[in-house]
Image (cartoon, rainbow, N blue to C red; front, side, top):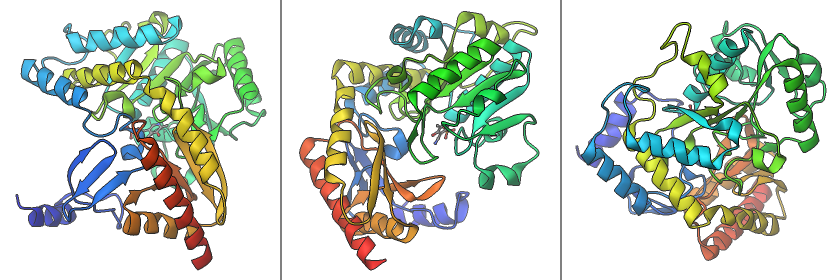
Length: 401
Ligand code: PMP
């Protein structure tokens, strides 16, 4: 298919998610760069929305994909056959996680990981209530959407799961909602789409304590914050608070689709019995995705890439000051740049893209926050130069607005 007909087919036959897709025509991507049909080289400052931590097309990940595809692709639904890439990845993850999270159930995406976590919590506890947070985001399938704390996206699809209570994030009043009738509390330790908002350490410890007291499971959704983006493999490590179920996806597959939930053998028994096979998936833990994930995790740890995250944060905080900028928040390479107003934000993002080839983005729940999530492999000089360009673009947008 020619490039012209590809563009045409995208607008005519590919179902759209808005009336204004970015519509960049990608011909290739490697490292920090996206290359477009019209010959532009674009700095990907959002990593395909928190996915491409090692940059695009890392050679070791590509090799793992090619070798596994040649060996075998799909052979059986999840859970029946022993497939080396899956076992290797599960063992590697278990060795990196606390002992109470030593089993992984593999799925294909973030929302599926949360769906499975919610079902697991219901079956394990025999309860059906959930507590979730305003501005939390957990995905767009019906269960995950039920615990997503933004009315504008949730209400059009109601009725959804009944018995979900929403609390303010970092609000101590949540403790009263966590009772012995609640199956689980689901939350992001650092809210992503809600505007890159970190939880307060003392509050998070109190939530953990309250969950333990009431027999409520604590689910951490680290789909966006996981795999080193914040400078630790998972953000919960900063807090010293361990969840009962940890959900992951996005960067996990090194650019391939993969998700998972980690928990204990005891909790996962709920999926094994009464009846057996009560939660299954055809493609979950696809061998090619698992091979890619294992290679990506190997590179991340071997090359000490997580150590780049605090450096990215430090430089962003140092450089991103001045006209139009309210604050930089977040942790490591999961940062939000809060600007004064929506018009400045729109213009700044457009200036960066149109004039400087730097791709930035919003978060789903805010139109005054610019998402900064560069790949961890971005080199010092390009990072510095890009941050200075962003600062100047914001200043110009603020003056023009
Ligand atoms: N949870 C969080 C915290 C997310 O950021 C996202 C995606 N933005 C999801 C869940 C949903 O993941 P997916 O798009 O893979 O279903």
